[in-house]
Image (cartoon, rainbow, N blue to C red):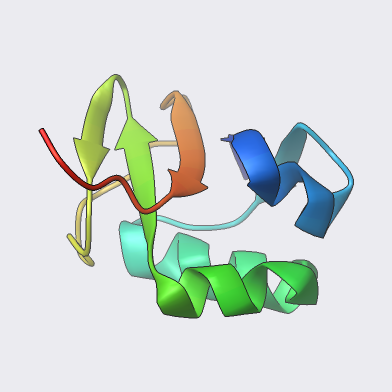
Length: 80
């Protein structure tokens, strides 16, 4: 299982700041988050960003995630 920090307004959808979920890559993690926390589904479908070990990814579906990775789920990050 991967420990995921739920950031910002997404906490309302899970009720937790940290959750544990299975996933070996970006898309698998998102699919399992939606199954375990259906309240996240609308935001995930709109778009989310995932920080893995300090690097932010958007739609990098097959980016690998290790069980010891630091993972943060956040609303889609726009701008620069």
